[in-house]
Amino acid sequence: MKDRVVVEDKVDVEEAASANIESAKIESTKTAPTETAPAQTGSAPLEQQHEHNWAAHTNQRWVSKIVTVVDEPERYEEYTIFKIYWYNTGTWEETRDPDRFREWAYSEYGSLYPFYHIERMEDNPLFLGYNELGQPSFIGDHVLWGGYDFIPAVTHEEDQGYYETYVDYYYCDCGATK
Image (cartoon, rainbow, N blue to C red; front, side, top):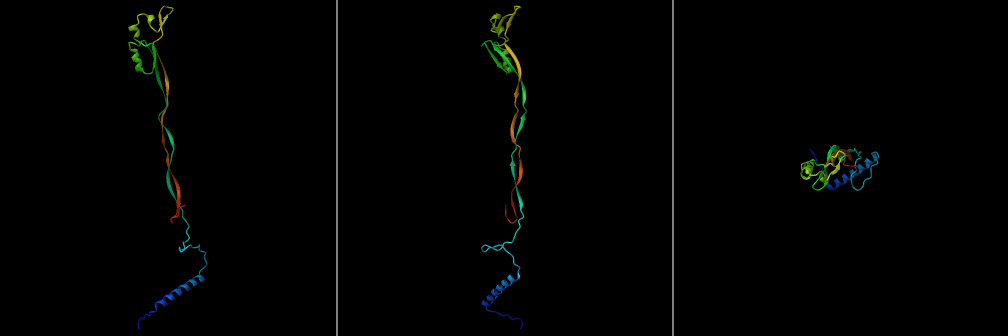
């Protein structure tokens, strides 16, 4: 006879298997060293002890640095003031405009007025009188003087900041963060 297969009843096989499992459990508790395992909650399997290997996660943020940039430096600018007398209105005008002075100088009602309209020296509104030599004296019909204006610097503000790298959190390969 070559090979013989013995078929047992299915119920007997299942009872024998469960009995073998129970006896194996009892034997393993007798021979295995005692360990303190963490308490399990519910039916979740035991987790293995894990030591976190933390790695830094970095990010960047803008750090503002507002500075004043000089487009044109401060300076002093020379000017000339023209004070002129208009004979037709009898008024003095003060201006910095050289074109206005040129207009007065060549005007019939400006510096040329005495040549066109005044026949007697005494009729001139700027006549002061005669000096000790008998010459007519007049107040000048124009005055020129100069000065300097302070021109402040032309500036604007700029943000000349920079990006700063910082650690925003730590993470572990297991998915934990802190």
